[in-house]
Image 1 (spheres, rainbow, N blue to C red):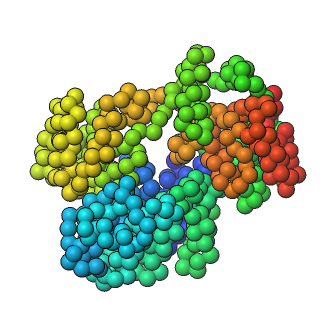
Image 2 (cartoon, rainbow, N blue to C red):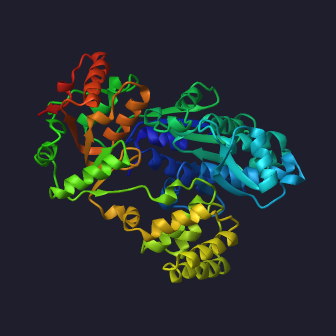
Length: 501
């Protein structure tokens, strides 16, 4: 895909950048193009770090890059903080009592910072705060940087640019850490995000931090608004959900791309059939996994082949070894995933030399051989984790085994072949479908978070949105009341944006 003029400016602009990128505007495409250019043109020894929230996102960046990424860091937020700051410099910052092979277990909770430090010194294990709105990992990493000159010099000598994706999902501690890197260590940052797509305020995400950077004088600012995913009618609807994009409204003669069906609990399936195209990809998005699964079961019973895509147990592993369990699952379940892919996924950027490849092949083959025996399998995974410098937690081993031995989770690794899916709108972030089916009762639109959720859900659709409105439902009533209030500012009503049946 060719770069737009705005995207070209972003790619060519040096220094600190913040990019506010609406849904469907090609933010990943732009970021990958910029990373590739800056790696290719770099003439000194330093490297880049591309930091994401999920292992999947990190892998997507790696797969789309056309340059050699050996030695560069491409991984998750926590992996960067742990592997590049905490583990190597904990001793220098806090003393010899912290000189140990550190593991991570976020199920171990504590109330304050001192408790967290004591737990590391006594058990050599990183835990997390009881309060989801606080982030021990990044609070610790920042304090280490402030205490350790060696740590500061290391990062300055190693990195010439750090890219941070989905910045709207950063919490306060993460933001303070990244701002320290540029404001105090003079490491250039490339920040991309969209506060309209902030889905994780419940666990401390602070979209206001993202907005605040727009006011910093040491950052160049860009706003990407051209949606290449959704048709104009869907763009109109989603843009009107927020004041800063409402001016992009462009009246359309036809409203057939967004359908609102007034239904009962009994007839909504039959009504969908009148507008749904079985030949095109589609997603039914619900607020909860239970509702998504229930809807998939009902649709399948009416000859609509929707499959519920559950969240695999390993996706809840948020420690520094999370990538390892995901990589093992892919090696066992995805035919095209090889030992070379495994090496490529190691966050530290391990080179593909023959010795490492040979050892990994033996470990991975041992997993395949022992997959039918749970205890043997877990033992082999532990051996592989130790070889790679990680501690294997029993609960993580159990999550992995459940993932690779349960049919409904196996399907999550082969979902590219599933045309019609049912999932939560949280799980749909980053995906796109020809058609999207939503229940308006899932969006009360009473607060900013609900608008964020609705925006993400609607912008997954490329060509058609189908709204299901269940009569005499409290959530449905709230949706109508609050969408009307939102549209008042633009002088529009819902029937001017959608076709109602």
